[in-house]
Image 1 (cartoon, rainbow, N blue to C red):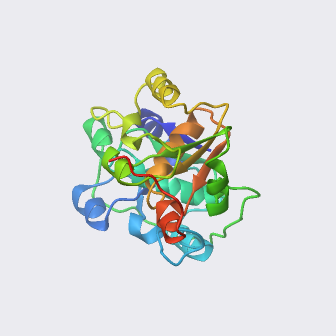
Image 2: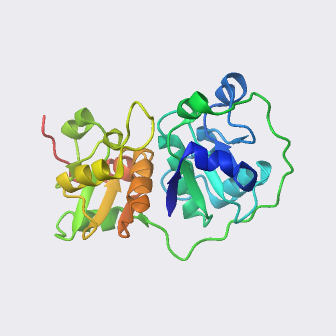
Length: 257
């Protein structure tokens, strides 16, 4: 599970947490970062030749966390400056490699910077010998599972891309829920819970269904997955291959332009 936490919550517990900044190196060192945060840029934990989809591989991920001074079981809070979508991808990756507990900053660096201290000084890091412990289960599903979900009345396929992309091509039966519809541009974090649940209900995305998430490369569904699990949804599938794999395999698509 990935839990959203406020800036104040993080500030009150900063000495208990491991903060991970997934922005580019130049942003971390040039613009500034949350004090104590380590830098693990987005492109370091993505790979086209990793385990599945764009997961980097267990050894690569272990090396990244070792170099960042993170131990197994350390509570990790990740953030970016894009409403949390890149940070969510890092956290889903960590979840798939068995790391917990995991937290996503509700709001991003710009929101933090309004009321809290920042710095350009990198913390002193003592490398660890991190080892991945594969979890018994993960939310990851494959092409065949998604294909079967098309005709499953208990499943809801959810496309988290934007309206143009959806219109151009989407998996048959999928409903459109742009991931950005769940965030507030002013606070840069989640919309109020009542609004979130209303939006999800309006799209037929209810907890009594199996929710199957996809986008193009599994970045945007990471944020939606985090939102759903944070709200208590227990049956959420994560199609890591997303449309990149689906199209390569010749899966059926629908155009609504």
